[in-house]
Length: 333
Image (cartoon, rainbow, N blue to C red; front, side):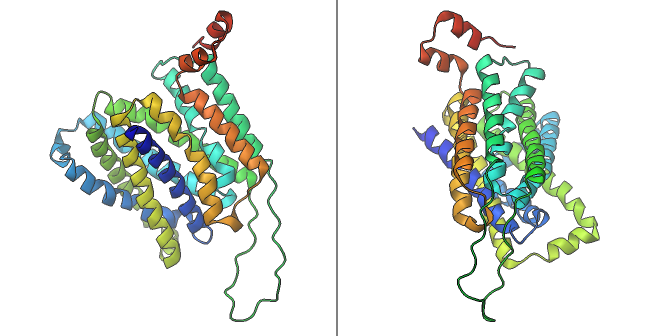
């Protein structure tokens, strides 16, 4: 039961992280978001690693594993996060979240090609269903802004222009984020295989430190420094929320896998997509595309993600299918 609670808390935290970033990049930029959220990961993980007694084991951490976690940090927290934030900015969370969720498919493909893990017909079908769901959401037309009831006065705050999603750009950035996010679990497997959850916390700290160091190199560019210096206080608040939430989400995930099997945790994490629709529409109702096709596409994507992440044998045996069909669905590459 506790494992399920931590899994749902992780899913909700990841979703709220995306929604708060979306709220900030309405008038801010992805670079500004990363300048706050990535270093905050270090601030959040450092005391957790200290309380877990892992800091004393830092120099005992295998160099090869540390290199994998450092590379993971750069790929996930710098490259993947930038593409995710950019996708949120140009197309909104509701349209891009099902595409980013395809990271599950990327991980599945890499697990087959690199780790030589089996992939069943059910999981392949789940990947196709997820892709179909992401395409359905792209068919939702943006809502038209209503005409103002009265003419604006001089005391009114200037309103932002109506949100017009850039579908192609959002799809491309979200796909690149999915590739980055889907690759990092394989890297984490190489680094943390046969270790406990507390070692994962130390590995997370290494990943965040590496991401912060590499990310700081962009400040050598005068244009980047100018971009970040123009950060508004209100946007900084949303980006700070994001940094704390994503660190909390990863902490909840570590707790979940320490208490429950991965095959139990991963399906529950797929509810993050539903949480994203709720939180993003709540926080940025005027800057999100929402409607029947978005809801339907998200539901289809969640169903596909469940087919990919749940043990195929459990699904097939629960359906009590004929032996011939069972053998077909459990065939694996």
